[in-house]
Length: 342
Image (spheres, rainbow, N blue to C red):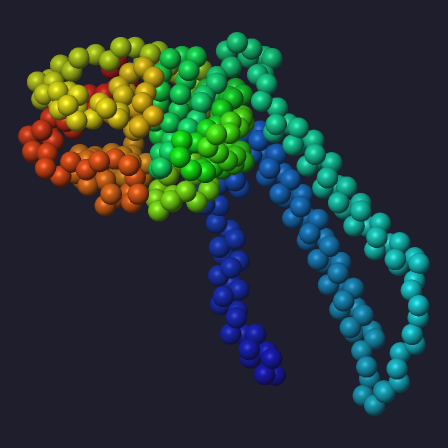
């Protein structure tokens, strides 16, 4: 009776665990809602493993309770059970069954590894295959479209329904490139080049993470993968390749001068970008600042004046003494960096 009273105390915790297991997570930031061939393969194999483990658990517990009930010691029964030496049939059975289960898991796992490691272009796409060089920094991501001749920062664009090849590098420490809804993670290692591919089944914004502890702001090293239909993707590429137009508003023109005096040493606008800070060619199109803050004037000013307070350990210098006039002008210039207006 005392045992049952103790068990009841854990009932609320058990119910909470069951409720949490039903949470899929944030949209397009979960491996439980696959949106690409890689993530679908991972999800299917995860379910296969789960079904096999569940079957084994059910069978083992069933046998356990049957034996517990059938062969329990009766009151006053002190006789020692008959001792037997081995059982060939049972030993063969409990050896063969695990081998069969492991084979069922091994076949799709091995074939899938070849599929994931195939970073050759899709023959149906051929020369149109998109190649992107990814570099992990503390704590942001750089995306070089070398064939197209430009750099993007924090947001990477790909065409829908096409195999995109990623070349992975790290500038400083070990990072890990991961888009959960589209595929598995792969480390970016200083001095070593890794390759992977991803494909999105449908247009959308897919959340990306660094999956390797890389410093005090590791948890804020987010990025976005934006999948577009091919014609929209081509239009975005054309906008990124175009020369940045001179700002038309006087305030933005003043802000360009501030930018060129204070920021251009680290942040490129147009063309291939610097490795010191994220390229800002399409800054006005971004939803977030510093990888996680809403892209509004208040957050942007706070970031420029004291980036360390918002993202500990980052390498951006602070500008606490910038005048309000220069700050307003600089923000106006950054708001003019709109790819759609190129």
